[in-house]
Length: 255
Image: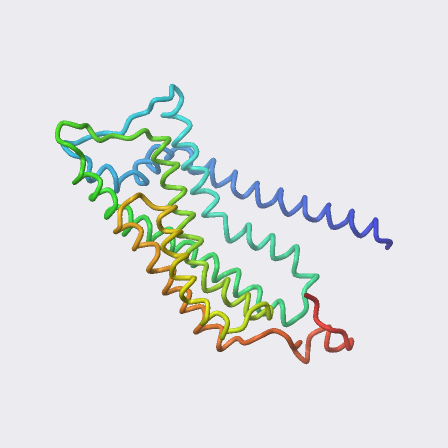
């Protein structure tokens, strides 16, 4: 099989796996469709719980009361299907990996997914109640504090992504060390810059109050230290495993 035929076969396989992943998301979305409104209510419950005098959210867009719950249902469907989506990605790249790479990549994919969900849960159950309670307490007298459902969804997604990515720090550190791109000593030397960067990130991706910034910056610093601690046990990937295809063929590992 020549290079062009190999490239086309890879594209066909990639298309097939993308279609499978998309179908999984769509099927789950259709199952969740009847409960789209309930899912949005669940998402908004941390804010609704602190709105004074039984306050409500508003919809300034004519079709917003329909579109926004649909977006929430699709997001939930994607999160539920995420393990299957990652499996399709894994099945596509696995044939091109050495044995030692397969043993490392699969646990990292699983760990990164779990950590992302933990980061989202941290934001929903801890950060949201603290931030919204603080905002409700500083609202001026006589001001009806309400928000548009579309803007709230945008805020929630931004916060989920920020905390989800923050909780990926240990995986990122381990990958950098394993790939030989940086040493543990260099990571230790970078601590002051990481701390400053953590508070800058907290200031950018959280509301302008000290509490919410601390709730992002402090976990980021702690997770950075956790990544350094775990990287000690995994070590550098400069040498191939004896049973890897590269070692058997007398080749150097890729990348």
